[in-house]
Length: 233
Image 1 (cartoon, one colour):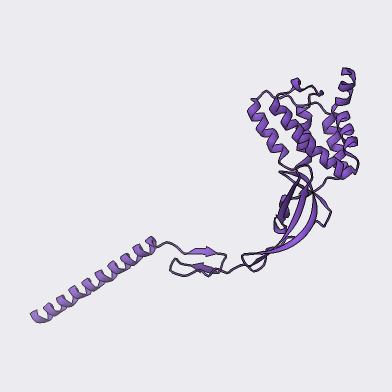
Image 2 (cartoon, one colour):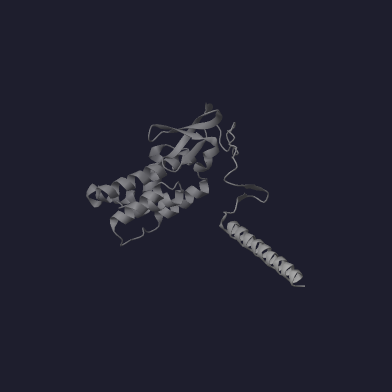
């Protein structure tokens, strides 16, 4: 009897040791699982782990957007103003076929190369209704701001380069001094005014299809510049 009891006791101890080892192993696996970073997910199906190699495929064709413009169309490029599309060309760069517009900016004597898939930077010239609204903006009273000139100059410059015709008209209106006397404006004010004025004028010319002189008269009349110049004379 004592021998049987001893065997049972040994078996019981072995079972306890085995159970302990299994529990320890489970705890270890659980900790490892928590410490391991989860795989990155792309969509619902694809996953990849750091050990896997990602296959990189070369683009053979340029991503395309719907073409909006044709040869001789006038367009507006925000940082340069009104330009005319002089060509639609193709080129191969790094095994990728690129289509692009050649845009001539007459006021700056500059030719831009704009990929067709980046034509979101361009906009069509304004409609007659938009031009008429700009004339109304030029006739309205300028906004008087009390902030520092450096801050206002930055805001005006951003508006000029935004490519938005109403913001351009607002800058012309706000910086207009109703006079051609240079002493009435600081050098930086006059520079910004002339930049905005010429940008707006070039779009008026393209939309109204009239001479630069006639456009200047129309804009100056809306700004009240003609009246003041005549009174000065």
